[in-house]
Length: 161
View 1: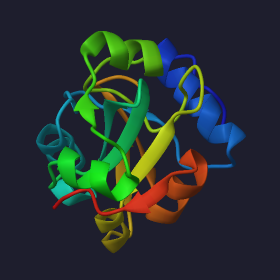
View 2: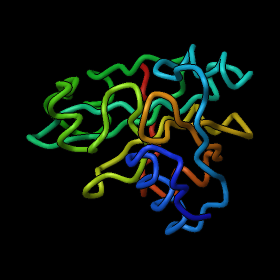
View 3: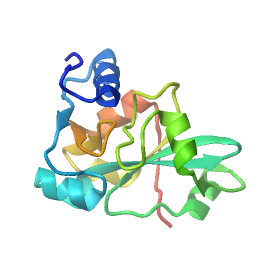
View 4: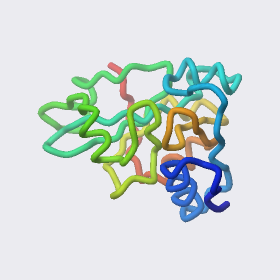
């Protein structure tokens, strides 16, 4: 897989990161927004739980990327305790853009300016196929739980209480 010139620049960076990681799935552009898990699932004809949301939080003065099932809300208190952190707070839009080079609603699990510490929601393992954002609210790519953990170097944890 190589970057597709017709994709937005941010999605081309994600496509290149996927190719560099040996991923065979391609970033595709959807006609409708996939900004939320519900929108993405509707556009893809899949379950909301199959959407791997990429959410950026702030902990210990640095970003923490949490990849969670679209059917979950991250319990930051419970996750902080699991990770031995004093707290985990939602990142501001500016922090998200600075850490990922991408805007909220289109944050991909990879293709960032620098690797991010990543947590992968263990509940994503129950799905054979997952979909993750491709760098914009209109781009996505197919993946699997195992592949997502591999390409992000993520630690697998429950993210709910």
